[in-house]
Image (cartoon, rainbow over the protein chains, first blue to last red):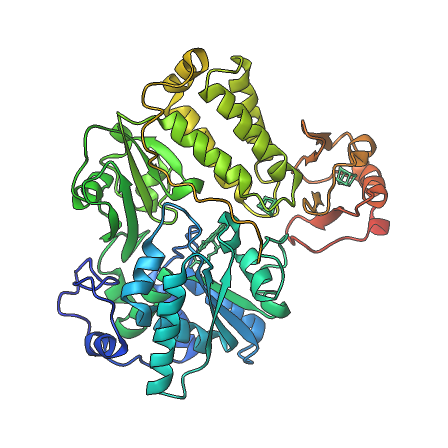
Length: 427
Length: 80
Ligand SMILES: Cc1cc2nc3c(=O)[nH]c(=O)nc-3n(C[C@H](O)[C@H](O)[C@H](O)COP(=O)(O)O)c2cc1C
Ligand code: SF4
Ligand code: SF4
């Protein structure tokens, strides 16, 4: 099947109408899934420039090759689609799985063929019940159609921020608590049950399925050199129509906000990349494209595609305070600098936010933030501190005011950044 | 000459603090008693202290690895 006539379109992953696509509709739109030689598939991924959409922005082809070389095509690898989406402000993975489950499943099969997988798994989160049901239905539909389809297992983990981290996911899938592990060994070396394992975000898999069908040149025909293709974004905060949308990475932050209905009120700052991301002042970021190169000068990155607009009538300090407390509570409790350090940092920040700290607390926060970085088994403390540092920079004047006078008049506003209740178990 | 560096397994480490006393040249303790290890490569003159810290850590949380080969542990006895 040839590429869609409108090759330059920015709507690749999301269907034109918001209706969940069944297998018939999927095949009518995209044609049958082509079968590619593993080497050809991986070469196409390299050429496409596709990078992971789970937050780390790592080249996808490099990852598939590493797993393939480890398993020597011998069929003892494991592929896991990461549908955990534990980032509270992100909905893009669930959105994609709701409307285009078969595109993700196509990508998963390409991955399984390319690396020679023995087990193929989709890992989601217990609280995302509807997604689990939609996935099971889509897998049943495929098996009815073609019984040569390999068996795709659906497994669920806890709704915890770090349970979507790849070594935590691997632990859970191997029958242990969903807590991160020290690397190396990295997943491609020793993953699920000790086998070479490919963990890939579901959006990345959907893009891979399109690369397989329409080729690398088609994939690169939109977007930028560094961030080709399209990206799914979850836009929320002070916008008229919050939700998930798809854009090419040459789109500016301002244009993304316009596509989400435009700003409600005056924008003060934008949170880019989720709770491991950065606050940037609206003035500074508005005309920057969301491409990695363009964002680099602002210190931000697209991360998981989260974009939250904070209006001048919100309190960045109170928002940051709540999220820091949430992130501290989400530590897996394994590494001292994370499970002792983050609560101490969150508590001190809370004292500053509520006007109960000495001025020296700001220096303490800065020092602790430097101190805990890179000292956990996973990047949880690093991500949380990126978020903290950006808040201290962007809301510096507000922070000093809170320090002296306590909460401002916007502190009681409904929160922009959701903080889910903390789940008890780690299963 | 292989360049080596000291690493700590943050999951195993339980802040016993021994290492900071045995290898103060490269390990300082943070405000909560957990070790902060200087990332730069180990010079010959500190290898003996590195070995002591590794062998005496009650949680066996420390190891030395080649800078270019993360995770490849060097046996403490081979440090001299
Ligand atoms: C604390 C933490 C939480 C993470 N949560 C998720 C998640 O919910 N979903 C996801 O796809 N990746 C998550 N990641 C990234 C994964 O570890 C992994 O890099 C990703 O699934 C790989 O897929 P990709 O290359 O397609 O992005 C998380 C990483 C960290 C450090
Ligand atoms: S850094 Fe924190 S979240 Fe990550 S493994 Fe260690 S304790 Fe758990
Ligand atoms: S001696 Fe071992 S357990 Fe104690 S602080 Fe040092 S590394 Fe951690």
